[in-house]
Length: 233
Ligand SMILES: [Zn+2]
Ligand SMILES: [Zn+2]
Image 1 (tube, rainbow, N blue to C red):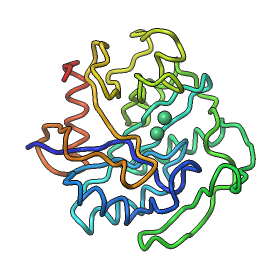
Image 2 (image 1 turned 90 degrees about the vertical axis):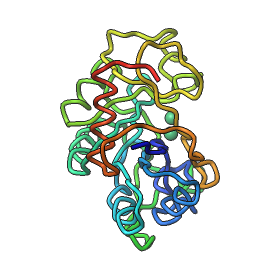
Image 3 (image 1 turned 30 degrees about the vertical axis):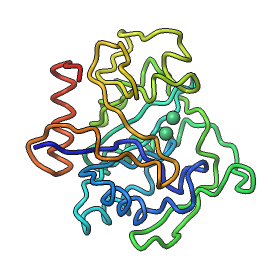
Image 4 (image 1 turned 30 degrees about the horizontal axis):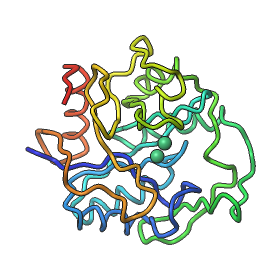
């Protein structure tokens, strides 16, 4: 079956994410747009994923747990998972390695953790948009080791994109998929996402993947199959 997706969406936990980007608002906007599956991918954290997954379950939208990892070189890597427990293991690892700089909400924005009723249950105190101690050389294997898929994010963007930072795409880094809004020219399967920081930027039902079932398992299996086949779309 065809599943329309947007696998790169930020919530109000990202300092740069709009405060209206709550789990309920994101899920409802994705449904209005006609999407079947989204991934919530905040910077260096997955702490709003449990709420978004729960809201998705109640409303018939598949929500994959994810995070947008910042490598030590300031390259953004979208890390997609089937299960939150696996993402949590990556998050625990990242938390130990990332720079500890206190967030200044008045400058960078709030970093709010919400529950499935959009109630604030916590605030991340350290700034999330900083480099982790994970290098781009180890990212693919590290994420795979925790059961996820590491996808260099927005490789067509100069800032924080792998090609923009390194100057060229290095196949030796072990990535099996890329994220790009245009034809990347990279010989790997490609996904196209919105990288929405505001609700209205969430993708329309334009890009789809073919999956066996409309479930986190089905979507993740389809992504893994694309990686294994190395097929460009
Ligand atoms: Zn990014
Ligand atoms: Zn992003």
